[in-house]
Amino acid sequence: MRGIQSVSLAVAMMAALSTTAPVQAASKEEMDMTKITCKQAGEMGADFAAGLIFWIDGYISKEKNNPMMSEQWMADLASIVKEGCAETPNKSMLKIVRDGMK
Image (cartoon, rainbow, N blue to C red; front, side):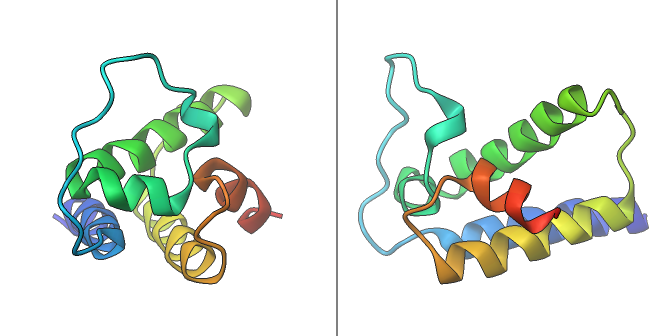
């Protein structure tokens, strides 16, 4: 149950990044997920932003050769993204997470 709460926290946090602007559909063209900024993710809507945070988790897990997910990691990831996006909305979310992990 607590793991679900962490995932819900991450999804809620990403929803908070959404702007009041009309939701834009994700492009049907290929996108470089490593370069999407917090601002862009927010403009694409909460569902896209939440999916991006899970994509980042998988991307980093592959880089570190660590497929494990924990409640603590999801809480840390949510905090890193929330704080980093508030400070630098034009920075890529992946870069924010990498910088926040240092």
